[in-house]
Image 1: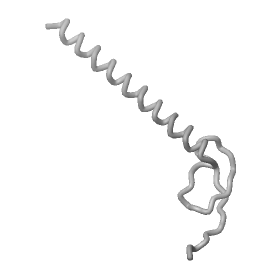
Image 2 (image 1 turned 90 degrees about the vertical axis):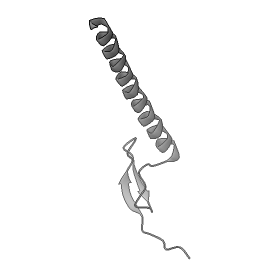
Image 3 (image 1 turned 90 degrees about the horizontal axis):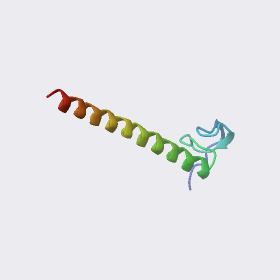
Image 4 (image 1 turned 30 degrees about the vertical axis):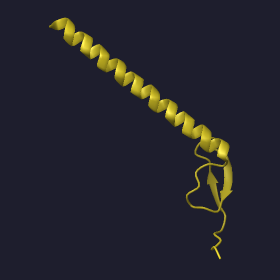
Length: 67
């Protein structure tokens, strides 16, 4: 039989709502917040990659112009 852990009061990493979790690993109050948090992180990572790519392309153009 599984050991039951006491409920712990936590704050959602995404929306800031207070909730009770049995697991010490819980980070979100619901599956919706978990999904939205993942999408936001993915979108931020994509934007950072795009900025890096644009900077590299500009560097290549400047390098070719000076040669």
